[in-house]
Amino acid sequence: MTAYGDVAVARARIARLVAEMQPTGKVLEIACGTGLWTAEIAGRADTVTAIDAAPEAIEIARARVTSAKVTFEVADVFSWTTSARFDVVFFSAWLSHVPMSRLEQFWQLLRRLLVGGGRVLFIDEHVDVREKEAYVAGRDEIVERRLRDGETFGIVKNFVDPQRLQNRLRELGWDCEIRRDGGDWICGEARPAT
Ligand SMILES: C[S@@+](CC[C@H](N)C(=O)[O-])C[C@H]1O[C@@H](n2cnc3c(N)ncnc32)[C@H](O)[C@@H]1O
Image 1 (cartoon, helix red, strand yellow):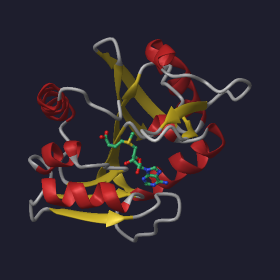
Image 2: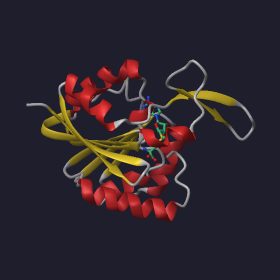
Image 3: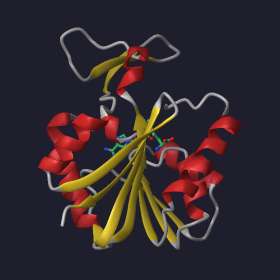
Image 4: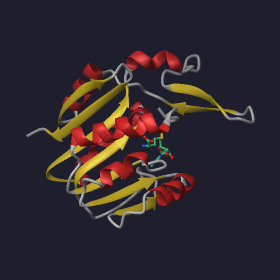
C-alpha cells in the first residue's frame, strides 16, 4: 500500500473512499505521508491538521496540497502533544505499522484527541494479502524491506483481520465497524463505546 502503483487509479479510489467516509469538520490525519489522502480530505473538511514523522514526506505533501485549510507538521504521533480536539481522526496505511505492544496506548491517544461524538476513520490492508510481505523468521510482526542500494531493514506490519481487530477494540472500549474494499483494503470507522 505504500507504493500506490498507478497513481491516477489510486487517486480515483481514494476520492471514492473519502466521499463514502465523509471526514467533515475539524480533521486530524496521522501519518499523512506525501498527502495523497490529505488532498481529498481537504475538499470535505473545515480544517485538516496532517502530521508525519518524515520531513521528506511532509515536504512532498506541502507541495502537493496547497489548500489554506491544511496545516502540515513533522511529528512522531507517539510524542506529539496538542490541546486541539478533532471531529475526525483519519489514517491510511498506518495502523498496520503500530506494534501490537503499542496498540492500547495508540487508541488511548485517539480517545483524547476526539471531541464528544467524534470518529476515527481508517484504511489499511486486509490480512488476506499478507503473503505479499516477507516476514522475518521468528518475528511475528516484522517484515523485511530492501532499499534500492540493497540495504535491508525491518518494519512492523500487522495486516488487519477485521474480526480480530473489532474484538480487540471492543476490549479497549471502542465500537468499530470494518468493511472490505476490494480484495486488498479494509475501511474502518470507530467511536468510543457509550
Ligand atoms: C505506509 S506510509 C502511509 C502514508 C499515507 N498515509 C498513505 O496512505 O499514503 C506510513 C507513514 O507513516 C509515517 N510514520 C512512521 N512512523 C510514524 C510516527 N511515529 N508518527 C507519525 N508518522 C509516522 C511514515 O513517515 C510514513 O509516511
